[in-house]
Image (tube, rainbow, N blue to C red; front, side, top):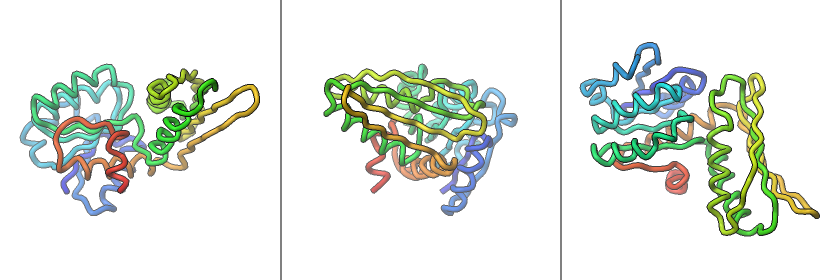
Length: 228
């Protein structure tokens, strides 16, 4: 498969590494080479089966507009842009493109969401709290993952409302902690990323899945298919 990895920051470099390990033909595009999505032209995009974006909230929307307008298939690992999601979904539909998005492509985090659904559907009368810790260079706070976890709980049977405490610590990769408590007991579920490979691997697996499809997809919804 021919992949273009947009963004060569810490996670983007690992995405590139894993895509090559899995036997794909990979090219990379750094942000400084792609001012205002200028490198994402129709002739260039036609050379790739799928693109993966790990850039910044400032760059990703322009990248998406350029890619989707030309019918490309894009996996987005960048966070902090979801106020534009419905516009991007509409563009995907108009241009018969492909879009796979997630606030977190880690398989472990997807399992955390499933556990949160289970707890939210069963634990009426309990209090919910989310705590997340990331590196100081992370631009969005709370993290997209924490916000997604909060929305997962709100959508459950009891409409669980969860507060979020966000922390930024130098070199922290990412920890999300869900606490469910009552006056008499407490349940704690925690996901800790040990390396960026967990995010990168999920994004590459997602790209492999998207390459044969068109439409807009949330990784949370299609994860069971990808996992199997």
